[in-house]
Amino acid sequence: MHTFDRHAFTDKFRSTQNGIDFLKVTMMGPNAMRISEEMASYLDIQNDMCVLDLGCGCGLSSLLLVQKYGVRVFAADLWISPTENYERFKALGIEDKAIPISVDAAKGLPFANAYFDILFSVDAYHYFGRTTEMLPSLIPYVKKGGYIAVAIPGWQKEPEGGIPQELKPFFSEADAETFHSTVWWKNLWSKTDGIETIDAQEMACCKQSWEEWLTSPNPYATADRGIMEAENGKYFSIIQLIAKTSK
Image (cartoon, rainbow, N blue to C red; front, side, top):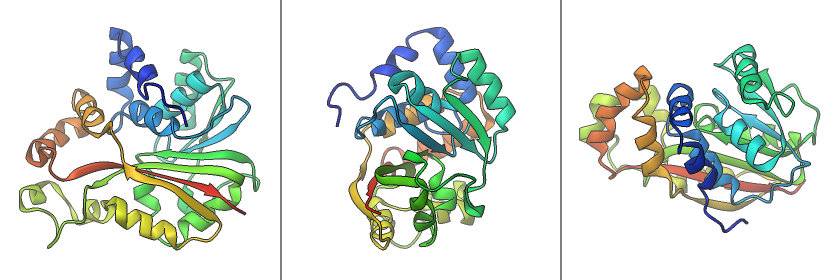
């Protein structure tokens, strides 16, 4: 585990107006670069590793992994086209290390077993990973002793009686299904053979990652300002789940 400043790369990236502007147009939720950097600090990442960045969005997590650690990344997403990410990676000069690909995790992945040292996922797994079948379906793609590392938004604790009253205007039924607590996710992962869960905790960057997202002109960020004002730090968390594969 790296014990140095867990957000040094992100803070340096945001120290220029170009960096801030780039983040504003590429974030798709709480700042994925900051979240990725904090979670990566808990992993033993070597520059000869191959990483599957599952649900990479516009590639902020892939950019962090390539530029900070020198790894090779398969930047996989369902919603953002590989061509769009390839053009972005070329502009950043990382196209030799970041390989964009379109995948739907719920329908299986087009990779060989034991191909990856790390499966890494930021702000995506809660959309497709809430079943008991998903995690076991992903384990074979990771080498024995490799990592599965996931960061997702959720509750500080499961709300009693459903969605808190002040948040109800902002939550659809589908939204509510994706939000769970660290305890809920840890219990789900504990049902899976072939992994050892080595970390399940709330992330320190939650507040700052959300604040940075709310500066984006993205219409979804604009819409989120209301819910974050109503939430006011009382309910939300960003949850980190890290497991090591044992088979």
